[in-house]
Image 1 (cartoon, one colour):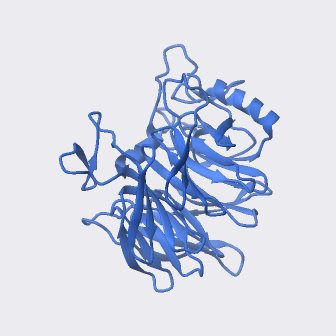
Image 2: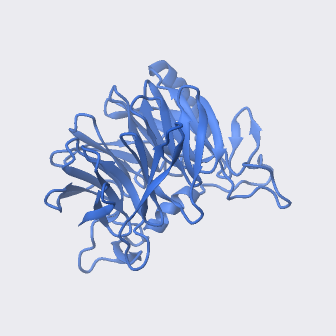
Length: 407
């Protein structure tokens, strides 16, 4: 299942036919990408080498931290420029999700099974700090993803996707103090304000029942249907003090991120393979509503909802990786869309602005082409800063997003 998480960033919906504008073409419609779609990111756009994986906005709104496959970007949100780039060490790789702020520190999860700290030095420059090893499984990485911090600053809760657990980490001692089983291939995580309860999105859903058809993912059996899709996606509610799951509910397929509203009353869930957002009652995990997120139901492919953010007014934003747009969810429905780069993969909101990171950005256009053409591994990622639109501005952006999504 974790292999399929990675494949999300490599899916293609169409093959360009002979005579079509080639991938990388620029014109009034934007930039042509190999899926046959065009991208024309709205707002202020920054490009950078690599793929955006996750992001977090500082509480004062001044700095945006972006986790990429290449390292950590530090972005001045007002001047809208990258002020620092911290590359990963030689053998490090980014996991598919996981960045959080802990006071004046930034923590990221690494694919090799570590928590990595970034902190400011005396000169005001960011640098790498402590590295905390997380428990592995069967001599392989735990593949940590989502991360959150309990009040007080010395305890982190981390999803261990390959272990099918969440870990409680004592940051002062640099050790894991507890590991709690959840569903299959957990990915996203949200923590209650008092730090006692974790909500976990399980990409692979429930543990299989006896006699169910299964496939193996990193040594874990996953219940699947005849087309080898997981039968369920679930959210687990974890009592951290008791060290156990107290409730689990089915949502859409491949839930990948969860977001608790500031009041702690509702939980939004991004369902990547159901093209929707589930809204749950945080107290009992009852489903309050399911919101479809697609700019055009007639499109022959899904929207792949893979990231969430919420502003101070309660508006939800849902990244639609398959249609290169971000859904704006108001009043329990999708009110419209904001055009993004190719495969938006992470979001943040603050100060009446929406920030969007796209994994594929403008495609394989970083650097210069070699003798055999452009290198598919050298992506030009995009970051966007967009003023959160009102109804009239959103209507125009929605029309544009629908045009660009066509193939």
